[in-house]
Image (tube, rainbow, N blue to C red):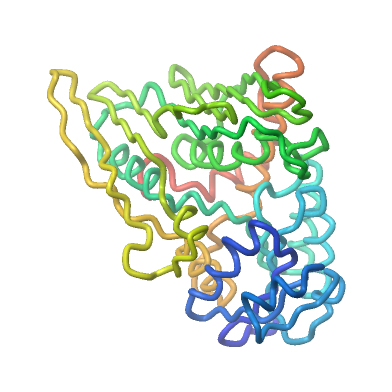
Length: 366
């Protein structure tokens, strides 16, 4: 890569809403080799209240024009992800895009093409690959504890009966619950099982006055394996986070990773207790016997550490563009399936499928 980057890498964030404030700024600040240098936000006072010595600019264009940045994080509304990522890379910057990558597969292809042309590292913040619940279940599957997996259920339920006035809850492209929580669940499924044969989905609005979808049930098929992804905003009693059935037993994980809760509470990433999960994974062997498996701690900092190493030429991109593009294919196909009322295949080319396979570690580590 031309112009070897400096150490530490200087990072800017475009957007200081929920994602930029709660996730990206604290995680970047806690990752050795990364220096949070600037933030673009219209709420200058809010940024300076948290980061009093930071450079605050008013527009993405002003952020991308700073001469002392190496990388920017796009943490703005979903509809702006593609154009801002393209502008940043054309300005010579490496780019992290918050999920979802883009609005559709066509945009994902366009952004990926620009990254290749400008030889920039482009990555998507799929932080929940480093959730405690997912890491623990993945370890158990890879260890063969359930044998051949036959069924996998992932749920992300919330109870938010009041519709809020915000872009995430409108019916605009890239909005709605499926594009909010679906990227997490679908990405984890792809990491475990690969590209599905078909996608069948049902998306709807259940809350009074809702304009965007707030309930989703998506079924991914892999031969005889069935993967169910479910999210709702009207679940006062959420179901189990993860359930796995296989030919040798079952796994049950009741509660979700705690890192988002810790970040919301202001816990510094890496502080005592960071990422710890006291909720064990339950293993059932089919004879009536069960045992508790300790859940490993989660750590979202791993994403930024791996990305730092990729930019420095010391490792691989933790979420390469082809994986983000394939995930967009799942998200887009689910919407099309719900509209059509039938299962659909992913709109990926043979070359894209082959490229994706080259980056996938598979159900067992390579």
